[in-house]
Image (cartoon, rainbow over all chains, first blue to last red; front, side, top):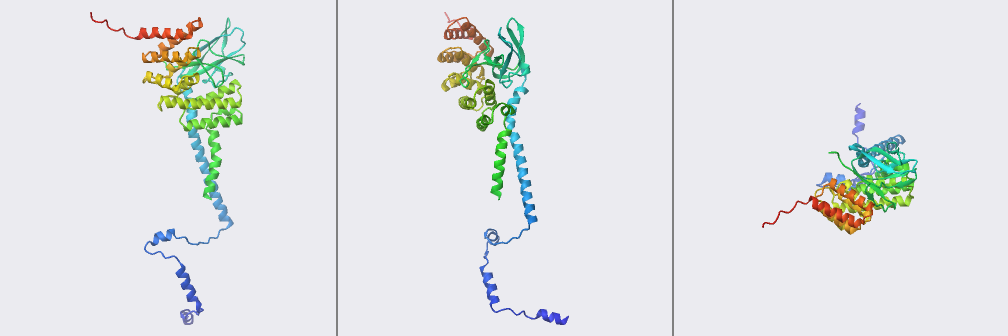
Length: 187
Length: 205
């Protein structure tokens, strides 16, 4: 035991240039001065990392999860952004609709439907199919939401006809007129 | 790496945002190119805080009429521009119905200045009915200056919406019976204003 202790206490023989190399390395290190912490944070230092394939895989998986969470968050945002449109369209359904009678005299017609912004201009919409009442008179009473609307009759699935008894809306976009309808809240 | 991740997310999410924010009826009735163009106009309108439902309706109307793609896109774009002008004239507090009716009036040939005059004449009342009557009169061949003056006169006289509707029906009936549109409108308006204006007190003798 004494021998081991003596061996450990004995000075280690190093080459003469060793001290000089150590001191050179110490002098080349950055000095932090009075702003030591700031200098430590801002002074660039070279670092060497080693990474195993497993670690790389784990990092990639983490990024993938992050991307999925981000996309999911964006999806929620998109749905929120979509709400104004859905609400705007849905509001017509949500608002109290008034029952409006549409009448067209079309003696030669075989089919008459009402299309407008209240039914997506869908001539097959079941609620807006006019019935022949006899004598060439076609009519349907259907719910129309409160608000300002444009509409037309579609005769025999092909001919668009404005309502002769309703206000007329000039439409330069499609070069045809529509009928106007203002449905107000019932007092 | 982080920049790439952000780019990847943006690239992946932007089309999703565009597609998800649409009315499903558009995708069902428009071809892909038309849908993309129409969606761009609608997105711009949404950013400008304009009502988007009329734009969807306009595109659906075009599809129902069998209009070609370019015409549908142009129609939606033009309507968006008219609604922006309308909102500029009527102010940010204008309702969607007011903006729609103002856009229809612009389409009928009413100028921005006249639109502003009608708006001012209506005061705090919604301008929707007045503009609907104005557009109807123009659609029935009443000259635009005449129709504008008639509606201004009625709006300044605080005529109620139901009286406006009655006026509209009477003018329509007169025109259908063969009356000159301008004369019918001015005559009916004069009668309505006289009827609703309180009689002036007799001068002291």
